[in-house]
Image (tube, rainbow, N blue to C red; front, side, top):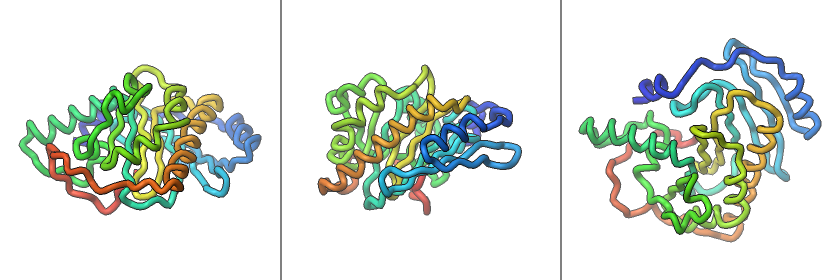
Length: 241
């Protein structure tokens, strides 16, 4: 299935580029910057929000649903492993759900193999927020989690307007998730210009701060949902994004 999705969504990565402008951008913000060597290329940026380190990577896609070069941001939050949250754009939600349905229902397969990305598995395993629960995000985003309480607490504040202000273009996939204590943001980004990196970092930093806020308030992630699922999932050794 993943090979088919890769062919459907991907195109060759962008050719190698000079990074002088991005290195200057990173230096002005006191971020670390280094290019990735090799034919595929790309770069890595590292910084901190307070004492919490984060990492930004731009390079070839690591997910079959991202076309061309991918922007990835990660931070280890130290949250309990049962905090599992996913927010994604509605077009990507529909595409993933169709792929899962075609593979596992029409293909008469009832177990999701551990090679399927966790964000795809979660869409059919966990409850979704309803339109009223999503509020201002309802037209552009979907969200799922075993516990709606943690998820709604995360979105109830600056994260919702930050997501609505994200520099999304039509058809551009975006995934924001927490898994195994790690916050990850993924999106397609053909050209990594400083203005777009700044805007996506604002979204990511807001998600990071809001996750820490909810955790410090002592929100209980709750147990996994008892809502019936279409599938039985086989959990892989690494649920990280």
